[in-house]
Length: 351
Image (cartoon, rainbow, N blue to C red; front, side, top):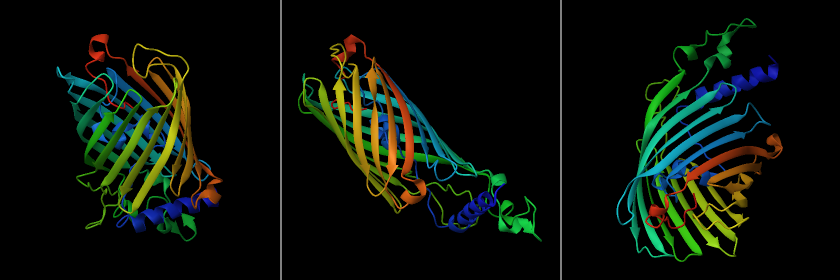
């Protein structure tokens, strides 16, 4: 083991042990946030034109600085009960695992969500959808203490692992807790050419204690994360559409704004089902004070395959050489049977 690795791990251990009582954990985030709607807002559960939606995403970041931070995610959601007027109840399942750094600090979370969608003013080319969603689940956070090195494990110039008081009085190996999230959204199609969606959500409503450090009266806990998203789908030509969006997230003292646009071009027309025409897309995005991002991909037969890349522009730019995160995601939407296609058409189905 090199001296550099020893000092990097020792520094990480010191940072955890000193800052855990006052530092609040942060939730995950993705560049391709439209591919992970259940992470953003539980009200987006079931907000798509089709029978079933399934997706998976992989993110790898900071590989040029340290052991890569890796995040995996998978989700499935579907409408359960559809009323005669098109209103419906939807349910979904979201899983993700995040693993970071030398000590394999990991977070596994499983969430079940439900959302009720109420339609207003449905016509052939316009209408509105108001949705309310609730989400609950279980999370486990863990760390591999055997990969951390503490100052009091060095005795008379020799390294004696496992004798640090942190093993007995301080940091534990894992912690389990429950999560409760809620959200509301409103989408509207003003014509067959334009629609928009706005959503507001609040995650970690129960503010669980997620501290791995086991100290009495520690001021730790997972702060509530507030989200707000505004997105649109604007058909500007026979085959070209614009999909601008703004996402705002705030948690404790951390906040981010992502703004940008996706250009979607239909390679050929498929009149059978909305959004099932073969298409290519290219997006440009900006995360304020952090990164410039590019997304691109293809759509065909209900599949959407996308990649994303972050170019870092924050204060870590020098250390990371501009490298940020790489993502790859896939989504599949099974189309509705024709007998249901006219009953349940989502205004501004961006997801």
